[in-house]
Picture 1 (cartoon, rainbow, N blue to C red):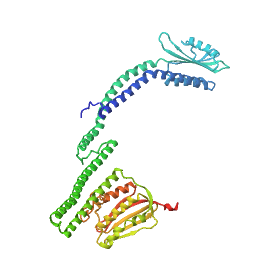
Picture 2 (picture 1 turned 90 degrees about the horizontal axis):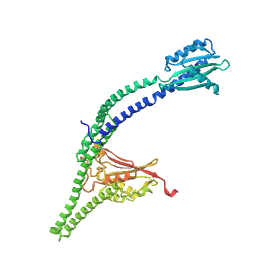
Picture 3 (picture 1 turned 120 degrees about the vertical axis):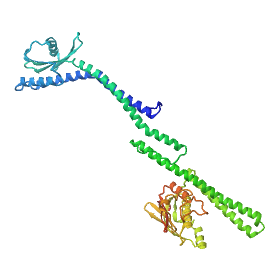
Picture 4 (picture 1 turned 135 degrees about the horizontal axis):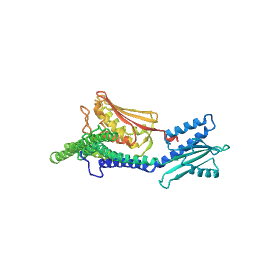
Length: 475
């Protein structure tokens, strides 16, 4: 894959950012070497010089002082202070260490003595710069014993680091060049490595946007964020495919549902016009069919409008506290008529003092839809059970029938619009196919838990839970 010249591409930006980051690090290291190493070296040498003087002072009056002083000096020379510094101890103006009066620093030491006499502390220090070479030397003088007029002088040249810095600078030039080349190669490789799965995902997403649903995105990326993205895109692809199929099914079912009553209405209207217009009995039968099909068509349209209104948020929930027993009892009258005319029996089990919080009219619609659905699919015993129990802060409601039941793999789809289950559990021609979808949307608006359980040949239980409330008359 060749490098894209698109300045806005992830590939190009990753490459540039990584290269800039590496360059900044190299420049920072160069800056430290050039501007700070020399000062750091001088400060370190001055500090260690003072430490040597204080260590000698601590051991000056001990036994075998000269031997200990020699060890301190040799140890300092073997460490970072170096062996280019001079130590001198004087007692009553007589040199006792190292017994060498040929020091080239005597002139500057005499100047230091004059400054110490004027000082209010027991030490003085100074830096002297050679006007010819421009190199600096550090001088330190400390009183060891004021009564004996014992003093120590330490002279430490500060210039050897210059050659070291020069060497480091030359080495850094090679290091920076090599590092930039490696950074260029590595950043180019990483930019391709990171951007490749994103590029592939983008190409597949383009196909998805063109309506090619059900395609799969690669999920074997080594980067967690990209893997998470492709997982979500796969879910979206599957949902879009499923939604597209549902849309086609809905269009087919709606077209069928609308066509059937319209065809019946037209056919019977033509029969009245051509055949039964003068026959009162036949005309009445044909008009009853027209009225029945018109009612069915009206129910379908109303259910579609109701579901669309709820899903779009145009329908607001009028939340209040109400007596659940009284509300359900008010909608059971049509089912009592079914019991007399067709032998259906609805068993209502609920205490009279159960109160819930919700939209009373919408909850009535939920129970009405569930009861109608249960009666359509109840078993040969024609019994439907409506059980309501209070469980703590929730009120558990369930509608049970003893019908044919639903297959486990189809159970989760019963809430979908116009979904048709297999075998005997087929939506009858008298329904709109939207009842459970409306129930689901109303329960979602109430933040209610809901579900369905079913066993083939045993029947189906649809349940949901509402928020329990206290009797408002008690306040």
